[in-house]
Amino acid sequence: MIRRVSLAASCAVLGLAMSFAPSSAQAERLIVSVSNHRVTVTPNYSGEELVLFGSVEKDASTPASRTAYDLVVTVSGPRADMVTRRKERKFGIWINTDYRQFLHVPAYLALFANRPFDAIANPEVQRRQQLGLNNVLLTQRVGPDYADVVPNDAFRSAFVRLRSEHGLYREDTSAVTFLTPTLFRTGIPLPAAVPIGTYNVEIKLFSDGALVARTETAFEIVKVGFEQFVATTSRQDGFVYGLVTMAMALMTGWMASIVFRKD
Image (cartoon, rainbow, N blue to C red; front, top):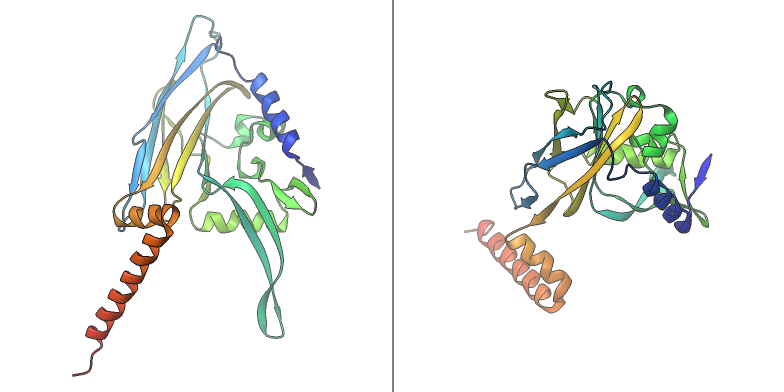
């Protein structure tokens, strides 16, 4: 089963979803923040964890019977095109036999909730709100079409598994903690291999299986020091980048000749 998703259709679906999103007159409002809006990556960076915290603010139109909430946090990193390849052993060696290209997908993707998604909403709401890795749209090039496929598709499963093994895709339905009925927090783990770029954080509030409020925040991950200089120079000044890399190669060779010199 394939879910065909053209670029025009994707925009139409997004517009339709926004038209049905809670309006500014909603009964609840989410106030959120993260512990650090700018994470710096240095040569010895080994990962860290940010903290997202916030509260649910009610107004006079909030139903008195609405006392319990569920929260889903989706963190998505910079988007890029990626390829998953299938290898088979032929004539005693492993070779690539097929591949699938994933288009404009998050390099980092994490979904956190206070309880299992099945307990938060029904399958249709989960699919529409993209709750859980199985419901997140990962657009692929399937022949001449742009599409997403069923969660147990071999290429999709392999793509999610490989990203998860590096800590770049994750799902945790016990990561959000309600400290009080309206105050909440969750951690956002960032592995050592975290990509550089801007990260969007979307927070969705549910009650009795329905979406009642949503908001967004963001943070960025940047390189600093010599690594940032090299990365920026490689993009903006190829000549200087070539000189720097040549100098580094010469220095490495010179140091190696000293270390391994025979007396």
